[in-house]
Image (cartoon, rainbow, N blue to C red; front, top):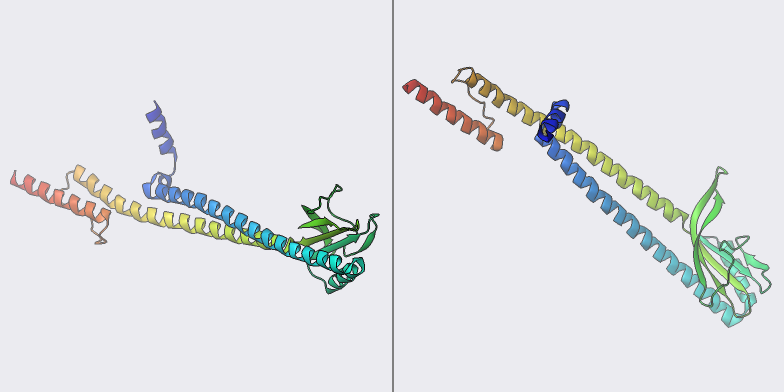
Length: 251
């Protein structure tokens, strides 16, 4: 019963989908999509990890430089350094608060990190930075930073806006998906073309077999001289028909 059900299911499919070359093409495309998806995921994760590592190294270097200024020359020198960095611009975020929690200087109005006790080695967290683009639309950009306690009771926050990096990874992902879709379209088109060629060759073989069944022993399969398996089958069938015709003539 299972065999009859499968045969009926195959009969309902269009002739193209019952062709072995087209099925093999679909199988190859399925394997390609699986492999390409794994490669895409690896590229995205590796790129995101590398970008985050570089950004963390930059933030850490900035924190080390600022805390070094604080230890060497005090709060006023640190404040002066933050003012200079803020005026210079860039992707870094700064906020310095005194022991009472009041803002001393910075280019953000409040710490984006959740309230909590800051350990001596600092507290790293990722967060979303609310911003507006040139058209006035509100957007949330990926960022992360560290909050460091200073020896005088002050709190220093240094972060970095990695929204541009996130946008780049998004464009990279879209480009890879676009390339994959293009390969799928070309692969299906190639599968259709190959299936049509094989179907035409098999049609000639089937016509010769039908003619021989009707008693025409002079029917022969045209040989394309391409050297493939279909040519070998055609030559073998023609040789068999030559011998069969010779035997029938002898009889």
